[in-house]
Length: 81
Image (tube, rainbow, N blue to C red; front, side):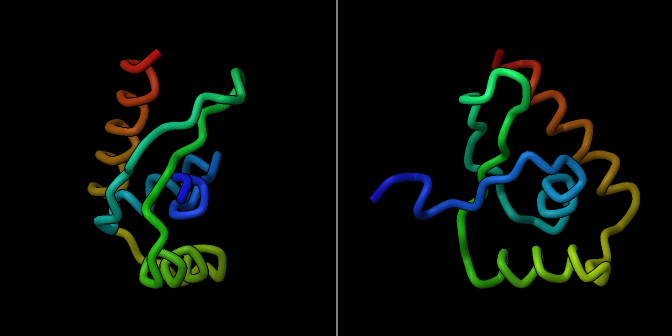
């Protein structure tokens, strides 16, 4: 089974920061598109529920955790070039 079928991938930085802030671990970065990185998370029912909550505007994230995870994700992007 490939990583694509067992993972959720997105290029959406705010969504990725929110998911990371809620404790969903980042399992990798996909750099196939040279212009934008894709964030990869392990696909679970809980993750799917969080994504739906995000798009409905109902996912609550602690602001400092969100800011910290934005910095961590940016660090991952630039440290693995």
